[in-house]
Image 1 (cartoon, rainbow, N blue to C red):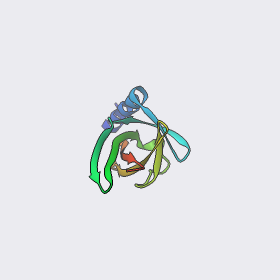
Image 2: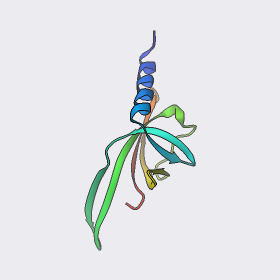
Image 3: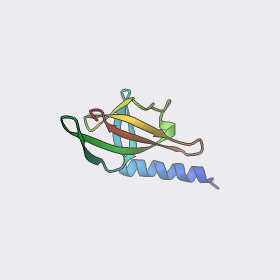
Length: 103
């Protein structure tokens, strides 16, 4: 009988295969389930500043080393920055909060 972590890991693998979005980090292609982009405009000096951010939920074991906040990834030909890397020891997944590099 499978334990709970095996069930979660299998579910995450299936979700990544079905709904996954590919992105490139350090020249390697990875897959993750992407949330919808959240686009906001903020008033800043000289006009408006746009902020385009989203989250990616990936399988932690796909990475030899997890990205660090500030590092970049490319998704759909656009460069984004990892803002937060959220994981726990028992979770087979990892969540990356990302924002556009020009933000």
